[in-house]
Amino acid sequence: VSGSARLALAFEDGPDHLSTPRFLRVLERYEVRATFFVLGVQLTRDRGLVREMAASGHEFAVHGWDHRPLLLRGAAGVCDGLARTRDLIEETTGSPVRWFRPPAGVLTRAVRRSCRTLGLVPVQPERSTAFTPAAPQVRMVRLRDADHDGARIGSWQPSLAALTSLLETCQEHAVAIGPLQDLGVSRRTRRTAT
Ligand SMILES: [Zn+2]
Image (cartoon, rainbow, N blue to C red; front, side, top):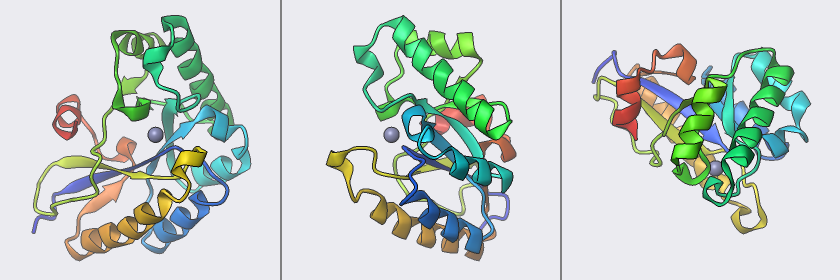
């Protein structure tokens, strides 16, 4: 058991007016804030929700304009999608955006170049919800936030269940948990977490 373990909690694919509030209720119960990697197209539908979430201390980051694989797009299209999403987040929350997590984890050279152009830092949270409280380093756990297309309907329920047990474990072992911006996530840590 280590009190120095820190965990960055990240969600992706939202916001979604049906599923996201369920996650927020759990986070509120444990007084935990998180980083939400949002899709621009989802954000256009739920800007009020995101504004409220930002006001209560959650962090927002770019997941893409939509969830289509970036590999299939030209460099200009990639950059445009990331820029539009970043701008919409900043306009909605009033806070600068730092992180980018690519859909399906695919980071191409064009995507990296776009990130540099836009001042975004690419991060790759872990796919697993498994977490060892004794590990004395910052780790990121990604819990799917909301289904974003027909094929994924219902995908968020297991994440919601996993979230509750994760937060219980963290509380039990006094693990600090929060958004990436609060945890001093370094370049090295990000590589470790990939
Ligand atoms: Zn995603």
